[in-house]
Image 1 (cartoon, rainbow, N blue to C red):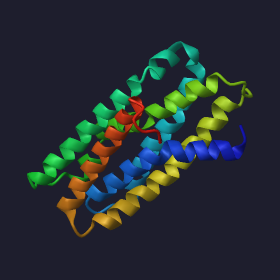
Image 2 (image 1 turned 90 degrees about the vertical axis):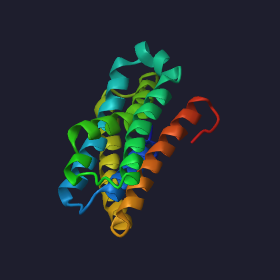
Image 3 (image 1 turned 120 degrees about the vertical axis):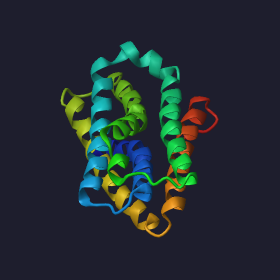
Length: 192
């Protein structure tokens, strides 16, 4: 694979992480650099880890991923977090800024947004790739996701500063839509 193909793959894989980062920025209070770094580290780290795991594990689990189970997992995780955000906004319950970026919540979102990267790692394992690819490809994917996630939190926060409750609900809706998109891809209704 050429560097251009890897970069295109990285941008495609980071789209969900970017959208969720925008959602986190929308729902957060005053965003600081540490919030952007938290999101970027979680999403970039998992986007790098998952294809590496997929490349190492290879064909053994590829049948499970190919079966479409990852679409259901992503849908469930994103729907849960998204629905929680919407309910908090409707109840006018202000989500604490620090808890919005708590490790438990970030772990769920990082897994949900990186399951496709695991499937890509399996696909990579089936190709004849150079030995350094298991480090090089995931590193590029993780770095691109890190940068886009950082920018996403900032962009979302700028959009959400004025209308906190609406922004929090919008963030939850975005997560639900990403989950539904993943589910529809699993049923081959849409193909993004």
